[in-house]
Length: 635
Image (cartoon, rainbow, N blue to C red; front, top):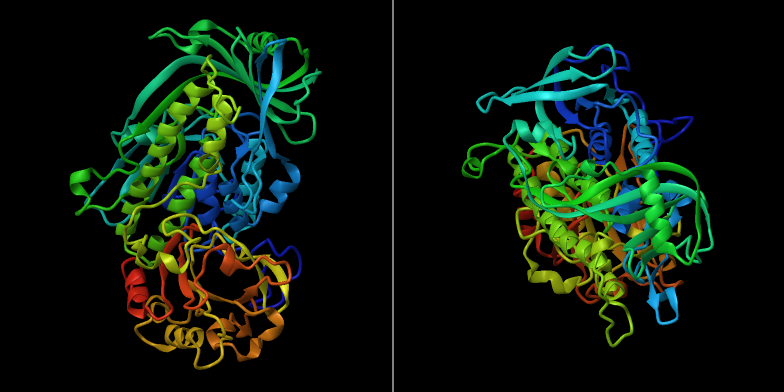
């Protein structure tokens, strides 16, 4: 973490200096904003936290509820989301508060007992990520984002008690073309409304999204016609795996899932209830918490379950639905219009909670969108960049819906199909699907943001189009062991990681020094073309290097000036741009990620932590062309 760059700052370094001119709690609604976000759930808050960091962007976040969430809803955080939390700076806090899911067990009837543990598997495969799979109350995730927003330069706070009633887009307007009518939901204020004009609107307002309806969107898909109950409980039981994630299938009563929760005592249960008729809805049955408890007790037999307190409960029907497009531009107008209204989270895809992906994918949507909106609103990129949001995230959601459709039915299947490995079918499929449930299988197709794989062999472990798979390194200037990916912050900047060839120390005459000199000084380089006058050299593209030698074999003062730039108001040196392989611990990033030792390479990482390209160190024209297709020329 770096601070004091523009002068000594006492106090909490996470609290940024307040930018002048922004709204404070209680101020009247603005007439115009840059971005209006509908819904303060995980998707809306993830987006707001990114926009709040940019002083020049004016954001309005509206939420119909009277205040922040306190309990209930989602709880699973995938390792991919934990990597994203690291970029926001609160992964360590989540790890401290949450329960870690290290192993998953499977229970089913056996020959001599109604229930026996028939399988247990490691929940997160070795080497797949430095982050754990954790469970924590969704409300605490909201709190993390809200804290980030309050500490940001804009001091952004949600406006509770407001919902989007309708909106209209004027395609011909160039300034604040979206007119939004907001309605008050606070008791005593019902029926009152206000109008706000926005450059962009993002609908994170759930499965019954008003924003989606206003742009003519609809969710398409099917339902499994199966009621499920979910409850967070404090209970006494003799079930042996009460603090393990467990799938429990009884002989005649159905199945349930046990999910231990943070704090050492709370547990969530997902319980299979009744089949529904073709046109029947969950609400028609009139079921409640007592029905969930009774069914869970029957499934758990012969183990006892004495529920002392129900903290939260809900009954739902599984549905798998997806909207046609995640923005307001019809397919036949993509060449002539750019998006003004976008959808995220449940507003554009819904699925069961059994794969633990709902909150994770929703945050993934707006983590993808956030940096693109920042780039457009700050003038770094043309508005056409926003077309990539629907293209990339709808493909990810389609994969989730298809997976969830199969997984939900597999979990609920009565018959077991034991394989040669002795695992029940559900356990075997669980193992096979672990990369997916960890959130690590999304791969963006080739586009302006995702390069061709012609040079993928130079770094086989940094797969183009997939998330940047971090690995241990040692920071050269202070010999600090750390993960390379942890220098990627949620700050809308691209990263260039230069992996040095064998023998290259960064000295003049080597490949790293030559590339750095070109990047820093040549007018054709992306740093010179896309960084504005007066900005630090790393304001748009942050360049860092990784060397094969141990840190004692290199001289920081002999590195190219791009790797020890002078930044900020005082022109202070940034000492955090150069890294070495962690030879002491035997965790060599070159070996771990298949980086060609002889040739080295450049790995381009997008602001959302996905690998945009892998190129040779000498491929200057290709590197310039990649950024030219995304960013505007500044000058």
